[in-house]
Image: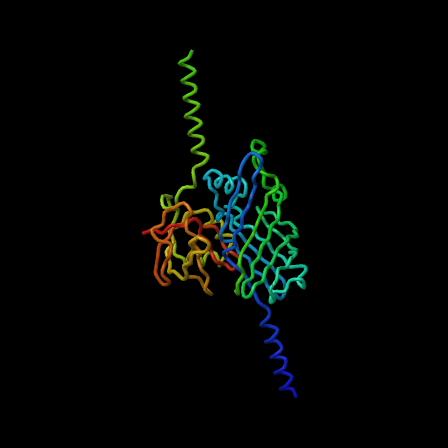
Length: 182
Length: 138
């Protein structure tokens, strides 16, 4: 009897354990847009990292600031040296949980709206955030897409009064990537 | 008076032209940038594994010439990337090729030893160290 129970327990753990899966990417496209009515300010980062634990709903995402690509050298320089101070604060990290995990069926084809509740750390400031995401499952492909806005002032990102009209006070962030088994 | 006006206009035009050029010029190619230091992939990974904060302070923002063995090379959505092995527990240095450099090649062979120059961007959530805007050094 004891042996049976032990094997049953082991089998149970093995089966449930196999569903606890981490999916993610190191190639997520993270775009930001701080375009104002005066200036076109856009950059793209091609190495965003996103990790999702499909059984616990834990989500972590990180982007390394120096990886952002701008068309103009001066804009890239100002972004790194003056606004984000990327040598001091090399990354921006989101850590949270899908608060409506039961609505997201990772194993079934479909498009699911997820709410990620957690913290966003940027420029040395950590703030509580709620970020929406769309998770699409099609066969063995899972894609993650999230669009949200952040206020520069919330993260102590100072916009000099001289360029106040040129930089949007609220920056649009967009993350998109294909998540695969990690 | 007319001559002064024309001279002023010319200066304004040249000034405007220079300003326009300076504002719109793309970031400098990594191939022509001066490096701050040379290190092996293994040494860089060890530094970050030991103390990420200290390694960030020492390496982030520096132009590093790094040598290591290629673990993987791929092109994703037109962006060429490669990873160099050398860290404990399989930790790697991830290199993204520079957008502003004409690269003689964008794909590398697994197992080959290469020397690559890039800007240290920091570590990701798994302890992999990222180099940005990279260009191969021959």
